[in-house]
Image (cartoon, rainbow, N blue to C red; front, side, top):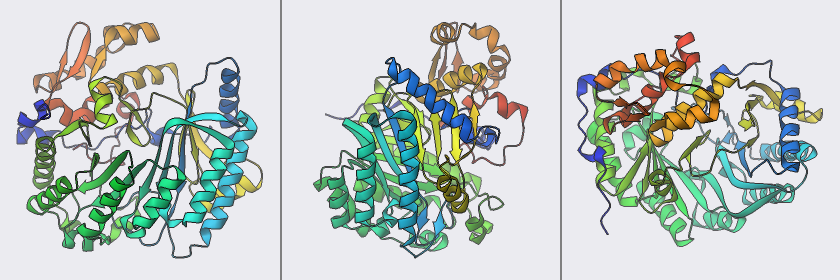
Length: 470
């Protein structure tokens, strides 16, 4: 059965519009965004949020948890990387880190009790596969002793292809991992050299073939456009190779060159970066090619084959968004373990210490390592609901928001609806009597549309901290 063509496949975006809207903006894995977190929210406030969840669980009001485990270590630096990571070849450092994770897990069990149900578990980094198989197995055992990982849970891990082989993938599957993500970025040798990440197409293909043979439920490939030495022609070759690999999901990220914030990026010569018109062509060509190859455009930077659960969630209006991006899981509390990791508990966000010494010191003293966060206001919750509806469904039903938050959309968001008018005139969004609807062309600019409803962003015009929205 042939896939149903997406309206995006025939959408032509005028180049002048692409240029006008190529501005920095948040990715909205949360609202408010993490740059709004404050140090007034710390370990004590986080403990209180956990206790409120525990009280809710006793009366049946708390659903399954999501867990995120951050492993910060990498053997070598990728120059484009903006993640919190520690470059080291000393693998013995993993042992101390695992002891800290065990202490952090124990603190959560102390507040929530043993056996809290978990429907989603994700290992990110850094490179989780920096840890040995035995270390990963021990960590999984610790998590299973402390939490109840429910049947059908999504258990995923990010894998640096340079640190894995088919035997490792088999061990990971034996630990319970059923979803896997490979960092590809680009297959062009010149680009790989420029970003200090060399890996061959054949090595990635062998890993993907092995993952399929091991019956992983979903295989993801990460790509980045806008890297040094990239051209539309070279990136097209990478897109063709990725289509040949045919991962179940594709994440296509825009490179954000922020050398003032991320030290490794200072090794990239800005003169080697593709100009805006080339970035635009790369994005447009990639979207067209992926859709023609049978992928569903999930939104913003994600694609999935029609049979993948993410594509099904998109069709059925069940798509959600969390700190890891688009998800099939409904909104749920997220416990974030590890240095720098960000979690969500009730109407609060929290972030752990960003350095290992600070993270270790807190846990040695029997304290949560949370150093900043945010307790959401009622206005934050209303705006989060609108922004996430736009990001996930491409549509905001007025009645749904009005009934949930006891407001009148046209009154509460009068200024925002007025600011939408230029986007309406450009054909990106439609404002009706009962809903706001993103058009097929508007999906290219969904971040820009969501930005209209971001009160914090309009109060603070500094956007240089964000990547460009296309």
